[in-house]
Length: 153
Image (cartoon, rainbow, N blue to C red; front, side, top):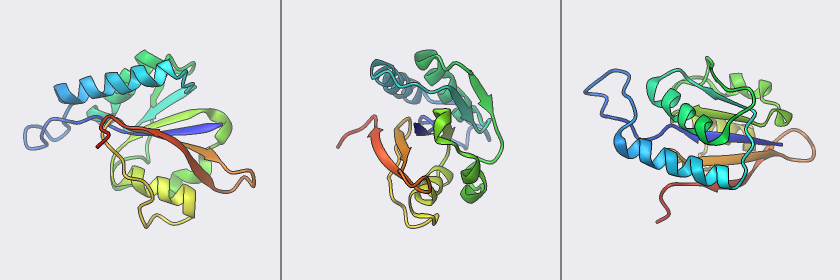
């Protein structure tokens, strides 16, 4: 079963507020990606977020589109500079979980789940983008199954 990792949508400048909300562009891009994900019948049972405004708003937009059975929940341990190795052991493939967080945490978590190390970077996130990981058959490491990004160069 998949694990969905999402970087929060584009936010207002930090200079304007210490905990910035999503910008209008961030809201529009997140809604668009969330609707595409819903069209593909992405099934996230629960959406966890860091509690920062931009992550919470992103999680709420995804929840509107995906209707997770267990709603959304603020959790600790997924802030920008948190230790990705601490949360990894508790991630279970059968949970169909979506995590909405920040860089560099999301990048480090992805690398750790795939390689067992937080570096080097193995995936380049975009704001509002989703990377879907799936547990490999041996049950130890994860692999990238697909990604959905707002900007395709």
